[in-house]
Length: 333
Image (cartoon, one colour):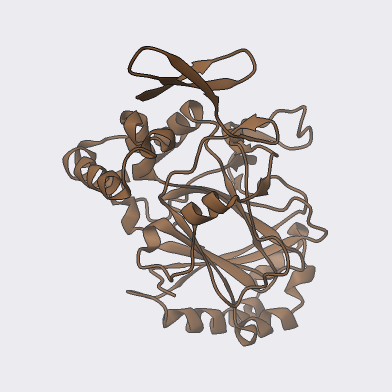
């Protein structure tokens, strides 16, 4: 039995080809009226046991889209920008099993973690009323007071570094109600889902990059967006469709990982594909692969391999300016 896809006027249909030639048509699951590709079992989300569970934490959607002036008339996006479709819903039980882990990560190159930050290390910044700043106040962040107020944070996370010391990447302030927040400083355009490139490692070594801790210093919930595939995963599914989610249902996880490791050893070292080219190729071929959205409340943080996964921040539905502090390092929490 084999699966293949047929394009129909307003939907995709998955055609199950029986050995006798008969065809059974099965609709692929939809989210709020939009088709959704199933999650591949790859990057996992760790939720610390101390987090507030009184309201929803994680959502999934039906893929990405290129922003248009009709939807965002006052925002300029780069020509290759992709943002999530607004088709969010909570995870199903099966999706939760695939995505969420309750074990602390052993491999931070393919794990996103959400945790609460100790109040005492944030107190110096809160005493400066940092949550009240707007993007127009960015100049204040260069004063000695703010530099001194970040020292307890760096000291605390130094003990959580596997090697080296944490680096302060900076404090960012964004306006509320933005679908994505990252701007190309040269062009002044929003770039949408993207890869960080502080370490500038080539594709085959991206999993060795530093990861990122981003702390919500504002007064509103912010949201971290990501696609739960590493760059290697994207390259594999582009070159070898048998590892796509709908096909991997028929392949045990052990076999999947053996296949990935074999591909990595024999093929990836020869690859000259740039991460940006890979991101664009994946987005064009698989725009229906879902995006994950995670709530980050004030005083909480995410840790993520942002040089190895497509990601972004979002301030939609926020009532105040978004204020966040980023540090980089080889962290293990």
